[in-house]
Amino acid sequence: MQPGYPSQPPQQVDNNMTMSIVAIFLFWPLAIPAIINASKVNPLLQQGDHAGAQAAAAESKKWSKWAIIVGVAWLVIVLLCCLGGGVLGSLSGTN
Image (tube, rainbow, N blue to C red; front, side):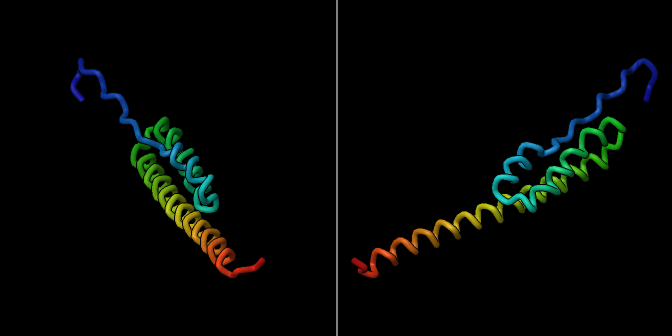
């Protein structure tokens, strides 16, 4: 760094907390590690560990995506089973 020039402000890292919180409503077992990793990002940035913050953010994003994928797939399966059961029940002809 040259004298007279201010140091660059630290880069911001998205901690993916919003996506982690959304994921907890879809499939909480996978969303818990996402929230834990998301909560590590800001303290790591404050300590100056930019690489660690990026790694925690990447882990948070990975777990959040898996939780969302599994949660949406589970909802689709449940809806298909419910709709299929309703259709089969109406076709059975029980009076």
